Length: 137
Length: 137
DNA sequence: CTGGATGCAAAACGTTTGCAAAGGC
DNA sequence: GCCTTTGCAAACGTTTTGCATCCAG
Image (cartoon, rainbow over all chains, first blue to last red; front, side, top):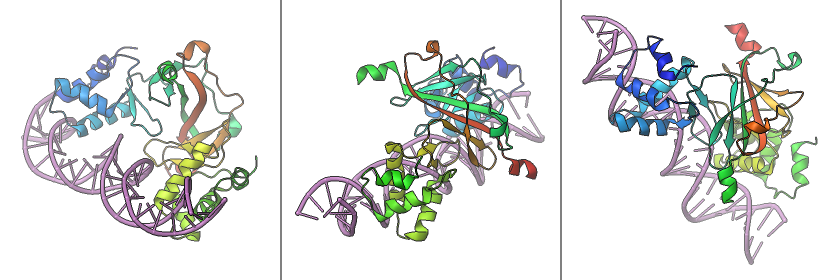
């Protein structure tokens, strides 16, 4: 899988300073940042970037299928530059740290369980405690 | 599995009018309501029940492990009186309808995927479109 | 009687929106 | 030059909080 920035370049995505900076902040795998963290990191290079623009760009990248949103209860959404739908997440309920995990085979829904829905994706979140929080307790 | 109210009675849960009404609203399986809907239903029997109390009671029931919270992106949390951790959810991305689903075997995380976390639960949400929304489109 | 539960209102939080100005193509 | 993107600030919906009052045990 090529990096986010290259995928975007290949897509004729209208390039602005703000969009490039957001994409650069998200570059690199295994990154899970909140909109707030993304704005803070982006603002180091482009101080006048606005919160609304960060949200606009993130929403657009999600719609394009280039990044994924990770929704954890009681916390701000995280943005994951790895759009591979076969990977899932493992979250620490104490500090919110999130890592990617890979399952051998994604559990399909038995046909008698679909309730006539058209199912098009599965989100799996494992919850637990990261080694760091465990050590502190 | 006995009903929510009976489980609570067996627990020496300090009983107030508000708590009983919230528990009664949640009684019955296959129910997935927002805090707002729960308050509205509770207010039919106990008009002066406050929003803060509804949230307090729900949080407490979640902590007790008597109900589950279902977090869907962009929507208010849903409360599920079925605390059975082996059931999961199937959600319509269009209207937000949620049904319970059961998997043959819950997918365990391979030992080389735990990142030294203590894993204690898995939340699985299947996303798709319910038959009703599909028919309308 | 006493500690925990409640109601109220306001604040907190993350996110979205409307609109005018700016700037990529 | 056109049309999209941006910044600002305010609105939004949901959830949480502080504090005085109330009531179940």
